[in-house]
Structures are given as C-alpha cells and as structure tokens.
Image (cartoon, rainbow, N blue to C red):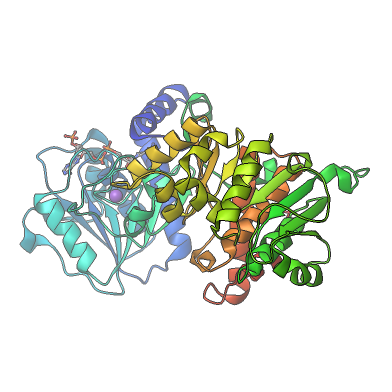
Length: 500
Ligand SMILES: NC(=O)C1=CN([C@@H]2O[C@H](COP(=O)(O)OP(=O)(O)OC[C@H]3O[C@@H](n4cnc5c(N)ncnc54)[C@H](OP(=O)(O)O)[C@@H]3O)[C@@H](O)[C@H]2O)[C@H](O)CC1
Ligand SMILES: [K+]
C-alpha cells in the first residue's frame, strides 16, 4: 500500500473530484459515512458522544458524523471550536445541516469547554491533514482538556495537532487518541515510533478515492498489507526437490550463546530452505546435532568462537545459495577476521545481523566489502552504531535511506513497524507484530527466516519484506494463543505460517 504525503493526498482528493466525478460535499459525506459505519459497529447508542469540530474540512467531517449519529438516536453533543472567523465551504454546509437537528456548543474561551466523563466518547475533528502550524490559543486549551480527560478519544483522519508527514516540535500540543480512523491510505506519521501516543490503534477506511491517481503517483514509502505479502509468497511446483529450495549456511553462536544458533537454524528450516548447514564453535556441535537434527553441522576449529575454519571440508562460503551471519557470534578478534575473510570471498547477497553488525560498525572499512544488495538487520541501537545519532524519527528515516543507497544494501531497521530500506531509497513499513516480540532471540529467528527466503531465490527486498511480515504474523498468532507477555522466540518459530 502506498503512503502519500499531504500534497499528494490533496491532489488525490481533487483528482477524484474531477475524474469520478463527485462533488466535494459528497466526498465528505462518503468519508463521514465510512467513519459513522465503523463507529456504529463498535459502540452502542447508550454511550454519550462529544464531538469537537474545527472549521476546516476535518471539522466538516465531524459535523456530518454528528448528524449521522443523531439520526441513529445516539446521544451526541457537538462542540465547535471557534478559532478563526471563517469556515471552509463544506464545513459551513454541514454546519447548517447540523443546526437543523441540534444546537452546537461554541468554544471561544476556556470556560466554554464542557466537562468530559469516563464513559463518554470524544470524537476529535478539530484539525486534520490541513495542519500548517503548531496548535495555540483556544485550540491548544481544548486539546489539553481532552488529553486530561478520562474519556475515550477517537480522531477523524489524524489526531489534531499531528503533522502527517513532517516532524512536530517537542512542546507541540497534540490529541492523544485511543483510535485514529484515517481515510484511504496510512499516513507516514502513524508508522514512526515516537508518534505512537498521538495515533493509538489506527485503521484505514476505504472511501474509494481514485485508484488511477494512486497507481500513477510516485512515492518512496509503502506499507505491507496482507494481500501484498501473500502475493510475494511463491507456490511450490509439484516436481520440486530439496535442491530447488537452496542450501543455506548460517554462521552463528559462541560459548554461552549457542541458543542463538539453534533459534536461527530452526527458524530457517521452518521457512522452507532445502538444506541447511550451520557452522558453530566446537562447543555448540553436540547441542546443535541433538536439537536440530534436520541441519548439518560444521564444527569450527575453535572451541568457543567462530574463526571460519573447520576440519570438516565442505563447500566454499560462496558456493551456498545464501549465507546468514551474526546471531550470538560475539566480537572476538578471531571472529572479526572470519567476517573479513567471509566478506572477501562472498559474491552473493548475504544476511548480516547482531554482532556481525557491531563488528561492521567498529571496522568501517568492511562496509565497503558488503556484497551488493546484502541484507542488514539492525535494531535501532545497532543502526545508530553503524551511522550516527538522529534528532527525530524523520531524521532517522533519512539516515536509513541514505545508508541503504550509499552501501547498496537492504536495511531492515527493527521496531514496532519495522522499516525496510532498499538500495533505491524506498522504505517498506511492516504491518504485523506486537510488543510481545521484544524478547531475547526473536532477532535470531528473523535472521533464520530471511536467510531461508534468500536461499530459495527470493530477491533481497522481497526476502526482507516477506520475512519481516511472516515473522510478525507468527508473533501475532502466538500472542493470540498465549498473550504477548509470555511470548518467547521459540513460540515465534512454532507459529510461522506459510499458508497466509
Ligand atoms: N482525501 C481525504 O482524505 C478526504 C479528507 N477529508 C477531510 O479533510 C481534511 C483536510 O481538510 P482541510 O480543510 O484541508 O484541513 P483541516 O480540516 O485540517 O483545516 C485546515 C484549516 O485549519 C487551519 N489551520 C491549520 N493549522 C492550524 C492551527 N494549528 N491552528 C488553527 N488553524 C489551523 C488552516 O489554515 P491555513 O492558514 O493553513 O490555511 C485551514 O484553514 C482531512 O483531514 C479529512 O478529515 C474530506 O472530508 C474527504 C476526503
Ligand atoms: K482530527
């Protein structure tokens, strides 16, 4: 799903109005109906509703929603925040229609603000995507009162005061909703970690804006929805054999961290790889052979850390269909040399995770040796070590895109909406996963999953997008079974599903 910026959303609106064609007021009616339908399906008419409307089209949506709910016998009180002398035309139109049904309360000074109680539902339609400056004066006072209140808050399109595609400043006053119901496409702001309290649970409402405009419009930002993930997944030919699905090599583990090698190996095998070889330090050999019988194991010559050398001869690093390196490997000098040797001999994209990334951060000359279109899977701290500190999430995004372009790699920046940056500078945000995944070992699992997909011949961007999606989905299914709190990395492996 594409993510468009505010200017593009405005153009999309206009394009739809001209080409469908539809009158602007009817488009507002359609958007408001979509919101009201969602609302009515979720909340009974017994819950009192207080709607706060501004004077732009977001306010117009709020007034139309108020009319629709009143006609369904909801107990609705409308509050119009009069922060300016004029309303937009469509807002004024809905304002007139509303006044035939009810007398709104007008808020011009702080004393006009009604009390809010905990069983009430606040609908925030003060400001939408037209926000052009920080909230102040009466708008700010109303937002502060809403945020202090115990009522449930639902924002129409976007929380009032939140910019859709650029950073807010630290002191900005912004609605903190429980839900955001947005129109047609997600907004970039929803996907950035620091905004989570200004977004709440968010959902997209389809209001049938022009498909043609969306298809034609260029963007660097995407949100992976279930249909798109499903389309990436390849079906298997009846005549395929294990050779068809590649032979992966995982370089993982060190003394005390053999578990990381086990998790990555099991995840790799559960993600469709044809054959798997794992190289671990000698101390991991028995553990791996006993616990993951499906994998072949190459014991490293070293007892405790990886050196890359083994008494068991096998294919060269470069002969595997994909290599994944990093889970639990530590940063001993021998392992640093191994990584250098690996980078000098690799000719295909590989997956780099965990301490492999920390080694790259400390030995920056190695970054230039990364095979093109390799995949790096840092969490934010690892990414910061590879790059620099950032001022805000937008700054971080730019650093991410620059890094992926500069080194010609795919970067999987892990987090609530994991962001996958491509060498072309595109960013794909993931839609699956939950806080239960913030537990030791889930990163090792992700490395196993992506390495398996790469070994099967998926292109690195596809392997990353599909791998991250499936990993998050497994976390969601596991959390549905046993709750987020008890989730372990092993649960994630056990719940990987490839019949999406
Ligand atoms: N395609 C869609 O998604 C549809 C969206 N709809 C709804 O329309 C809004 C966007 O409407 P718009 O009128 O462009 O914007 P706002 O409602 O946010 O209001 C803009 C006015 O508010 C002024 N403004 C901006 N910032 C502030 C501020 N901090 N304090 C006070 N006033 C502010 C702004 O003034 P300018 O000086 O910048 O011009 C405008 O006067 C969208 O969010 C949806 O809810 C349609 O209903 C259907 C299609
Ligand atoms: K709003």
